[in-house]
Image (cartoon, rainbow, N blue to C red; front, side, top):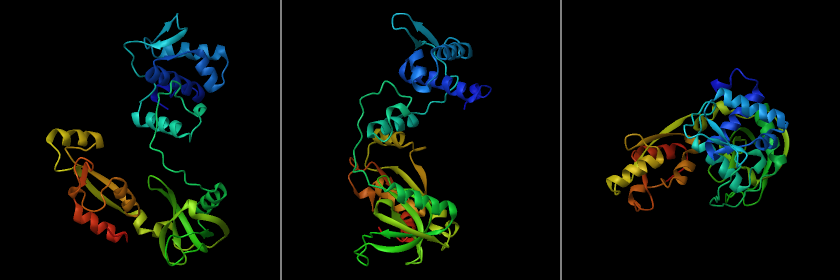
Length: 294
């Protein structure tokens, strides 16, 4: 909650933030919006709008023809610190259908689409048991289908999970494997069943690859023009033309793969691969340390 809403009751503060959200992002709000989203009465919605006018004078004007409040020309943020990434994350969730519209503050939903990837089927019971094992610090039996030639069929194996990772497409549990005696990633959709819990193996604090980080130094592709390099630096938020991305060793392969930085990115076309690693040799060595070869 912002400093402006700090002295208010939580519910009132949230409604004032909502009013400002709608005014800032959509330009207008009315009493019905508050009633629909928060379930308050019409008189309470009127009080909230009046309070907002008192706390943020000059921010909104009443449009008699539209019977709504609209953002004034000299609108000044009082209750929010709007983040475009937060807004677009909401928009993405709505476009993907992973969040129902009534759980979002966005009302005027712009036409939006995302690059669809197949939904990975995760059993809710499996996820619940893995979460439980993490909280309790115990091991658990899982019936797991590996893609390894050593285990072409699913087998029961015991793991001690301690964290979760998302590679941009799939979720996995980070866990100590009691068969291979090392920490590994276990894709949640490939856990077909769970069994009993028992004493843990090695715990999360012993997972060196998870608890240690490597700095990937990135920059625009050298074959781009100066103006193209400038806009790529802006696009990726690079500082002074390059940037440092700090990544867990256990997540390094996934991050580099998603950014197209596996192998020598500089040898790829600059018009399809816009960024490169500036510490390529060190990155290759880090991948080897993480037991993943280029």
